[in-house]
Image (cartoon, rainbow, N blue to C red):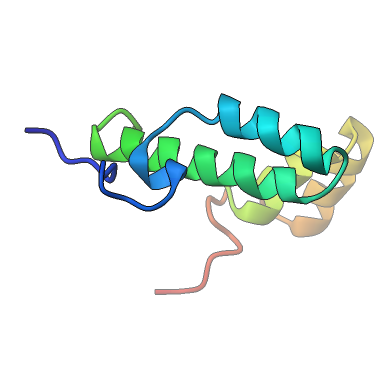
Length: 102
């Protein structure tokens, strides 16, 4: 038997594993354009992700050789800004240059 977080005896629809669509439909009709909808959707997403983790469907995270600052810079800066960032940072070939010493 595979592990699961779903319980048929649970008191709420999320933990019973029921689909979110009927609840979302009902909530949308009442709370249209309010923040409560986000919480309902997030609860369903968290439950679904937890189920995938328990079933082994989520791959294990592998560490990157890039430091967080360089990874973010590569995704947020223009090519010119990135070149300036790398020049200011010094040796760009050193992996994890922002990581604390061990």
